[in-house]
Length: 383
Image (cartoon, helix red, strand yellow):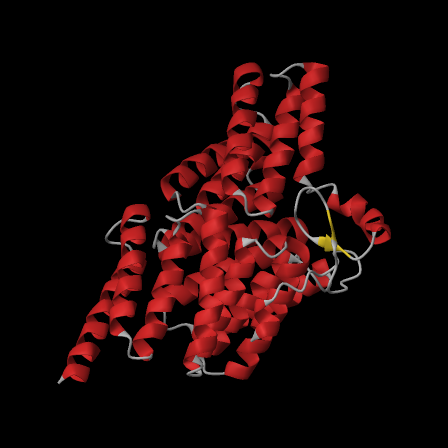
């Protein structure tokens, strides 16, 4: 497991491991200054260090509340989202929206894009009511320009579908996602990136609903095929599709296949996002779950503990994914017969979910059910 737990420090340009050079934005490594220079044209588009310098320049040249500053705030926020730094993204989106609303109104295209970005940020922070409100504002702007059947409308509907999914509103989610898929098909064809995103979220909806493994597997495979065609070999979209395929194949007890998907996703995330990104934690978490299924409990605990460390550092102690890590660690301890440690982690996870998602959420119900089963096992062991 040491090879999976260690940070290989892949070069973002040539993919060489053991790289030592790093951009001041602290995302990704390079094996040489030459590779860093070659990759700069791509990296500067999402480098928060460079974008923050552009923001300072815009303030100096145009004033603090200019259109140029609003655009710079928006671009910085988008970069922070890609880095998994959601609090910084929220701050920049809010400032961009404030400037745009005050001086240019709330019916223009940039206001719609910034509202969509803010909604996506809130969804990742599991602040779903705020996410839904921001996305509805975005959709209202998009319907004015560029229009109800535009690719931008499809993107917003995709995000609305994801929020509804995370709220447990599966029928409403499927309806929004199917409409998004139809719009993207009309605009870009059946193999465009928007269709792939809709398919991915439709598959996640099938997963949460249960009883649809064949449909789930089919749409995830279709999404992966589209992403490989659109994005090439390495992208966040491909990695996410691989994680989804790993989860469904693990559920179908194809554990060797599942592990190959998870490890490919982990390699991609490490190369393009760096070791501290929440998506790296997602991949480690899923591998930990797979190892638990294979009764490799010590290795599973190492994976889950590292995922927990990354999630806490990136998202804070009260994020639902931190609760998920506690839940998974608790299950491993329970399988090992350490029921006291299991209950401790279950309680920590439950407290986080109750605060962030509400006591009636699916995640809290799952933890409570596991706590009951763990208590029953402990009682049997003591008899």
